[in-house]
Image 1 (cartoon, helix red, strand yellow):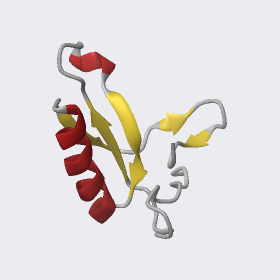
Image 2 (cartoon, rainbow, N blue to C red):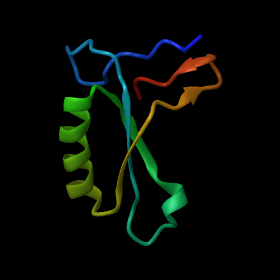
Image 3 (cartoon, rainbow, N blue to C red):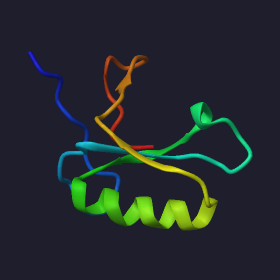
Image 4 (tube, rainbow, N blue to C red):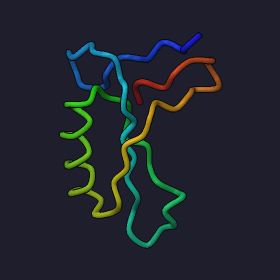
Length: 77
């Protein structure tokens, strides 16, 4: 059975967080990308563009990561 998805990290949205936003920092290995958060598709694009402009590194969108400590998806920071 599929795991439920957390809520979008955008304040007041409440939609399912179906996309994880990750950004790398220039000079650091790409494998050390920072998790920005989990968002709905529309807000993931906005947050991703902002994060890339802020950090200047690579930008990735991914399926939600599982939060192993809680046993569920990691929808918010």
